Amino acid sequence: MVNLVTVALDVPLRREFSYLAAPFKVQPGERVFVPFGPRQLSGVVLANEVTEEPGQGLKALSDVPGDLPCLPASWLDLCRFVASYYQHPLGQVIATALPGVFRSPKAF
View 1 (cartoon, helix red, strand yellow):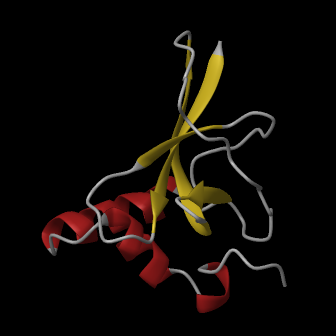
View 2 (cartoon, rainbow, N blue to C red):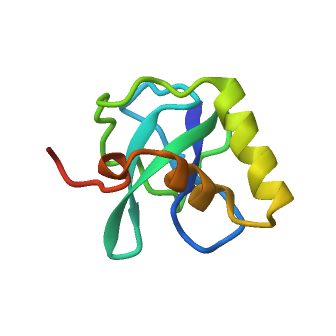
View 3 (cartoon, one colour):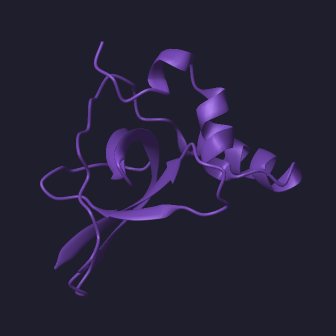
């Protein structure tokens, strides 16, 4: 069994990205760091799923800093509405709504 998470990233693409959660236990609304090409990005978990598929080719989460409280589902729903209404990528809407210090994957 493989634990997969769907993450919204601050990139100009209208999609979410899947990552392997192991060895971390994360919940929707939690901030995570993920590898994205040659760089590390900060993102927000939208969903997690346990599946029997092997998840080959997926990268794992880099870190779960725990420096931001888990964002409530109502807040994520509001961001989904805004992204849909303004036809803008969800990851960029979420990143814009967060304080600037939480947009970067750099340590404090």
